[in-house]
Amino acid sequence: MQINTKSVKLALPSKGALEKLTTNLLAACGLSVFRPNDRQYVASVPALPHLTILFQRAADIFTKVEEGSVDLGITGFDVFWEMGAGQDNVVTVCDRLGYGKCELVLAVPESWMDVDSIEDLAELSLLFKEKGRILRIATKYPNTTRKWLYQKRIVNFSLVEVQGAMEAAPSMGYADMIADITSTGTTLRENRLKQINGGTLIKSQACLIGNKRLLQEDELKLDTVRIILELIEAQLAAKKFISITANVRGNSPEEIGKCLMDNSELSGLSGLRGPTIAKVYTPDGDDWYAATIVVEQSMLLCAISHLRQVGGTDITVFSPDYVFGSQSQYYQSFLEKL
Image (cartoon, rainbow, N blue to C red):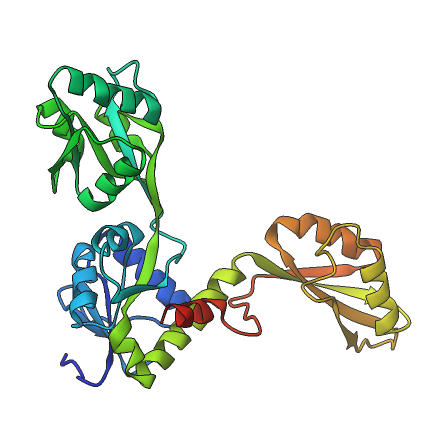
């Protein structure tokens, strides 16, 4: 597949869990990626013909966006934070896509019984200094780690840059501790390491980044960003809500609406703005109405009880695919960064 030079180019992770979760999100947003086979690194999005997908290593996506070979990219916020230090041409278009969540943490050997917090680590670094030693920290995130430790006034350390087998560094003797990404802590525990209290450097998840200059210069690219952000925001918002409809007997829509509004003891039980009431045309001509409310998922049973209290029956529940606001807050926030 040839790349259209006038297309908007979006880089996605080429393998692993991040690739699957990213393509799943785009599909849920109506932006399914068409990739003929796994060995092909150029793909398309039929819903947006001018959008070209390029599959890249997640660690390389920031560089591709920075150099301008792609306009947009999805990678981990940890990568953006580490590689974006000191530059302002790459911006987060959306820094919370809702998946790939993890933390960059400090971890020490379990055998360090007296080191459980960042305060303990600060004392240890001073003890090392008194003994003519320096605390060695293995990490793939030198910029983030160095800046964070300096902010904590820990200065007696050296960073050992490691690209693989990070957790093995202390046991193999080329580092005393590590600063690495974890999502569950299982790998740390399996390698006899423990996370220290107060030792979370950053919290990360998948994010959408973009080349600020390229996006500013092209209306088509800005409009593509708007479409993507509108769909992502509405799809993520929809996960929080459910739509509930009940048939209610009453004299008028106003009467039923007033009952639902007046009898609501909890905020939000009458819907986002209020209930929607529609006439139900029954064979016997009785006065039935369909009352629909949209509430947060956590309020499901309370909302069901609320509808029953006003005579609701035949209650159905649906999960919306999208919930759009009056405007896209994601897009407005992005424009402010430009």
